[in-house]
Length: 280
Image 1 (cartoon, rainbow, N blue to C red):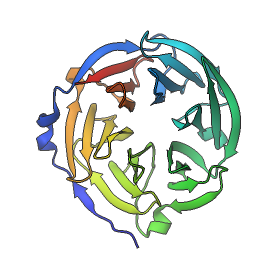
Image 2 (image 1 turned 120 degrees about the vertical axis):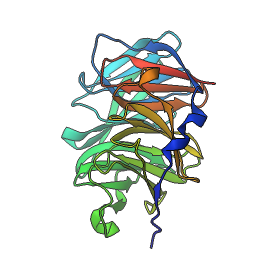
Image 3 (image 1 turned 60 degrees about the vertical axis):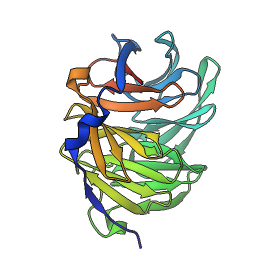
């Protein structure tokens, strides 16, 4: 039996974190496509999934240019790292997970895994693959070979938990998995066996999309409708605004944080350039 705690966070405390991020020069290609997901590599590179171009690109964040790219068989939704030289990309229309090998400055398509529904989000946790589905709505934990280990949905939970679970991220200590759901306006925190720990709501969370772990104690969330990036602290339930329209945030789709670079990357629905914010 899992514990369910609904936490209504206090957005009024948001000013405490303001000014910690400073805008830098954008990276990417402004004239082409749209990036709807990305993941940071450890060596000043960024792997991004382009929804409109059905591609994955490797961006050198030092020069701000695209180093290489590869085309996919369908439009991607989310990308994450699987190990040091392999990434995973979800292909909703084909109900597939595409493996991509990173070989120096080259991206190579590898094997695929079939999944059970219209797959959206993806992350890894303790050598397992965790995915979310728009329909049938739910979250699954898969083995490395794609075998189902556990699933959580409204039926197994015995209550309405998800309407359209979207993006996923794993805490840096591998203890928690976070799920964004724009239709419920909530972030759900699961343990590493997919038991519900907490659910978060706030006036700033009007349509949460991309999420990324900044540390064990802090998750960053991009809200598409509120035009903000917020900091969510599970231990206290506080939700604080970090960046907003005044900082250039407009309809953010996805975010990725690099702890080694202390840098936040933001992809929006307006243009293919990726906004860069240095954490100071």
